[in-house]
Length: 607
Ligand code: ADP
Ligand code: MG
Ligand code: ZN
View (spheres, rainbow, N blue to C red):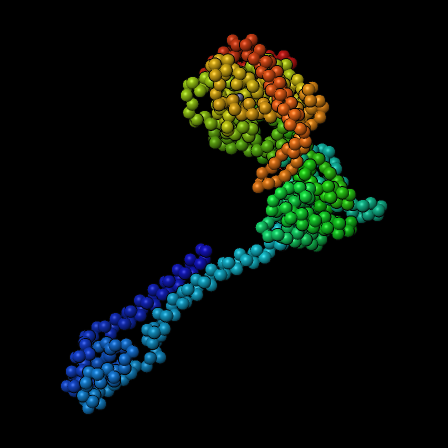
């Protein structure tokens, strides 16, 4: 479009130059005196005209005395008929030398053709450039089918080795095998071993699946073709399948190599599930992937690595032997791995003395590798904004909370009344969390708004946990409800500040019954088939597999659990009222309380 405008501008300038030249040239003749036809006729009749030069509609008159006049005739009418109409003396006229200027000259072009041609030229040029723009887009559309697989071929700068991937020991061990296949295929073929065609990497978002695939390519020192499942789903039906074809063609030319299909669940969902449009397209794409994988020989030395965070929705056909028969699970890192990941990403960042990464690892249970990288990055940004030379422990603590709950909103103006309500609410959460035996210790209480929350209480497990008991969940419920209950106890009524607490509490209580089988009344079974369906971009969960009567019972049980938790929380709130008051006072003064100060007020946690 910019090009088009530029061209148009050039044409416009050229037009202006020609036009001005033309008018300057014209102006020369304008200097001679203009006369009417009447005058001309009179002069002819008087025999004073020597010659007339006809130049289009312009008559240039040379008089006997040597002077020159210009007259204008009607266009389209010839001079002779014109003069005849004026009753010119024919005899006198015959002495006049009449010359017709050659119309083929420059003048003719300028006068007659240019005014017609120029707009046509301009329009033509405009059309031409517009069409060219469109046809470019068209030819791009035509190459849609070609795979956009990016190559990270022997790219030394971007190369990832296993050293750059911290933790994930088991996954690396499994993949080391794949590296061997790619490096020494002959060793395995000689023994008649069937080299796996596909490896499926499973893990939550940000656990380093993409990184791991690149690590395998880097270790084996082979080309790496990367394409994301969502790239297959384009606006034209059939494009996905042809992309798969061209991707594998490219791979075959470059073998040994790795084809990496990221987010394969975008195309590899169970066929037949789901409503809506892109469904056929996905099916075709998936079929093509299966066809290609079945089609290449073990000697092709291509290994397909796919990644997904939704193994549950994958089509079983993908998981058949001969396809993605190796599955490597990449877990959310535990405390040791977290520290290692932090160390990898802290390599190029100057840390202040005492900025112990172990402490950061302790505070970040449940964080993925990507989250941890983000924590360090945010800490570096924070330190830079404070004009510090290196990153302190405080910067990192601050960024953990930012990553967890969004940035602090110190500027949000709240009234003293709101502040007081928030302080009681958070003190309630903190006190109940502290005095229940099975809850995680409180690390920080704050009434500074953060993300969506008006205030927050940060509690963190002292060890990584993978299992939870019913007692723990009930206590968790009590902590969730504590904010609401404290507000009610102190102010006699509640605010909207507890809405999300209540929503979470209700959802948790429901899970205890329907997912974890923790309700004695309903027994050890799950309720509701969590089925994956995409409709208008929304996932519709839960297929009811129970009766109305059971639904009623579930509702009763939810209330039962909530009541149990309320009872527990209330008891602590009543018993510990003086402590709540101290915490509130401290919060109103300082806005945040760290773990050590909090424990000075309430005593150490007894678990
Ligand atoms: P996924 O594909 O599983 O969603 P990525 O591979 O894209 O996750 O990981 C995102 C980023 O997180 C990586 O670029 C890397 O910087 C960081 N990361 C994740 N896991 C690790 C790890 N084990 N070691 C080092 N960095 C990691
Ligand atoms: Mg990824
Ligand atoms: Zn709350």
